[in-house]
Image (cartoon, rainbow over all chains, first blue to last red; front, side, top):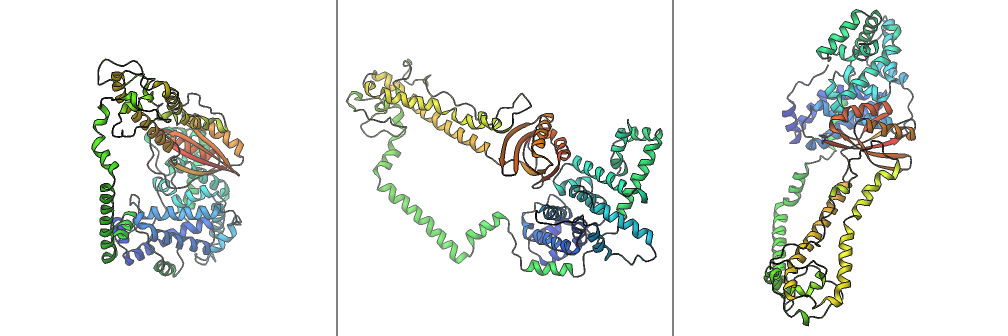
Length: 184
Length: 363
């Protein structure tokens, strides 16, 4: 789980004053999480980078209107999640079940799997299984299991009740458990 | 506890979110159920596998590209600050202009006031007019339209408008008469605009749910209409036929009636504004079949002590506006997830006691 290492309120105050260094700190501290959410949701590094950049720019433009009643990371995740879900919903987006594209994208991140064929096969199956979840279930798994957000933070990010988070996460995990049967 | 109940709690068990009672119940079940113990182990392994995925890293240079793009992006100031800045800055230009504008308005008002005898009279005469004694009513010519609550002209008395008052009841004994009983009946409560908390939980589809809201605003109108019709009918024969002391007692009644009418239209317009205020929450529900989902949604609303407020269809989208008690809202949203893919438009605001939700059904 990645945590911020600075005071949220202090950083927020500096952001509101237009301190350019504050924004740089925000980007550097949260870029992996924001990019990671986008990548797991969209399955394409290029799209993930577009969405992640747009998420930071939206935060930059509207920080004055952010009430500060949530953590900065939760707020950024909320912006990123909305952008991803809107993009996935758009009618003209031709989506494959993007397992292969995601694997190709994510594989660039990983060290050379030579000599770890079984692990590679397991991770390939895992990426594919996550990619094949419905958008609503996938975002909950990404936020809760991959990014380590609590149920409450996920609920706040997605603007749904905690009960809905619990239900969707459980359904997603049950679905993953069936798809990954042979690796368990 | 059944196997199904136990397995439904596996996520909370793995995340250590079960309360003590549920935890004890699950543990007791697992002790006696090999199948569920095996299933739990597979479930835990799945969660562990998912969590073991290496975190993604932003590509090299990403932060720099964002900072560069941000340099070209205008920032949004808080609304209040924007207003203040627009009013005040630049100082050397805005302040003199605004001072001149204030001065000009003040001079204009003073000029209009000093050159308008009617306005001066209005400010002088208006207060005593309500209790002024009627005079020479018999000599006043009837006019074709009833006067509204306008200030009486010099030489005229409020009773000159008493042709509007002829239908009033027999005069009360006191000079400062109590309000007449035929004074405009109190307006139906504004709640009439909003469909009443319906006892039958199942609402008819389509326009019936909107009918009460559409019909209700008409309700306050008839008494006022009937009264003005009465006024016109009574005009010709009425003048001069009332005793002077009766006319005097009618003047306060007329003022009260006029203020009641003003209150009615204010209440009606506030009620209409309430009816068209935006819902507390809106979102899209993507479903396999809109018709089936519409029926299932109404069942869901009924099961959660809610009420369907309105339904509208626009193209391929059916919008159903519902009202759900706050304490049932969480379970209601869980039910929405079972019907299809529920996508709220924005973060959930602080919910009122009665949550109005607009649900757009699309296929």
